[in-house]
Length: 154
Image 1: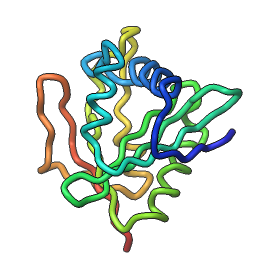
Image 2 (image 1 turned 180 degrees about the horizontal axis):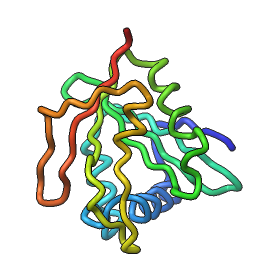
Image 3 (image 1 turned 30 degrees about the horizontal axis):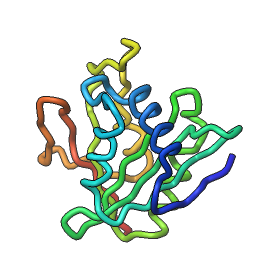
């Protein structure tokens, strides 16, 4: 397994990440085309991407970025590679670079993926990785219902 750190994604990498996004995230967040993904990427500032590559295939993506002066992140791990420590390793690398991290997490198990399998909420994973759930801070849109999580260096 290799972790590639980059600032700018190639078109091939964008295509692989869009496929990973559509495979793993709830279908309400489905990206119809590369323009949708480019729109997402253009909404995040100072992004640094970490691509987890195994056998020439991207199996994980972690991106940290600035939003309103704070450090935010998003992460996707292919379901066939979850529960192997990849997500915790990526979070630990981010914790070494930052004093504080923020993210949005779907906190219910009632969402479906494109293949109609259940999207399991990763909330317990983040709690296990020392994040605090800020129940009072929610993101509610027609596409997503999520809670904010926060990690701070002690």
